[in-house]
Length: 270
Image (cartoon, rainbow, N blue to C red):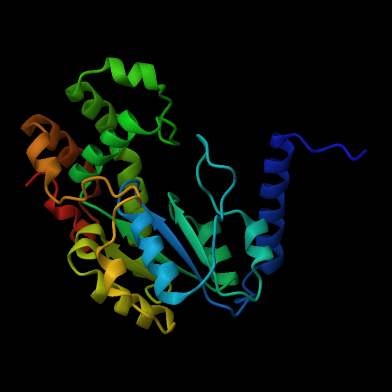
């Protein structure tokens, strides 16, 4: 009987495969010419709804391109890239930061990236609702449901500002810089624009990907049952105290050399 590899060994083998591939590839360029799409997104940024829109508008199959989700970072799984060779596919939403290895793999496998973000204050409030009602498993921190429920709403928000906002900024700045260096590979998208004008956004994405689309007007209005929560812009400004808003702004101020306004982060705590 063939013995299965322990999970640690599978993860290690995947990392070794990824490193070996990148070393072999070097600067050789595109390895696959069938366009693929990766949605790199902040948690609670409307990514599930966006994925649904793209699936129906473009008629492409969707795949998960990361290892079993848990408390690990959702880095790209190279095995999925190899399995999708020659196919036009949609890689469902991933909370993955930009890195040299990620960008090289995306370039090699003709993966274009939709970089989806949201106002940080709104994202914090929405994620707080998620942790209280769905799951406390995330890569940014360790938390258990009973621990989170014992906290007051104010303390829950404070916890997320301490642990999530630094990751959110890391994510956002890494993709801003990647977009600035490789604009033809990355499509920046704000949650606020997606909610306000989804049909326009799908059209822009169609042009970016060079994929024809078939937009369903009824689908644009259908948000129930796809984890959209309240989907309302401005909750952060309403629910966060002035001190909490100032704390977010202070963390963002470390990146004063990066134009955060290009993805809407200028609106935090204003």
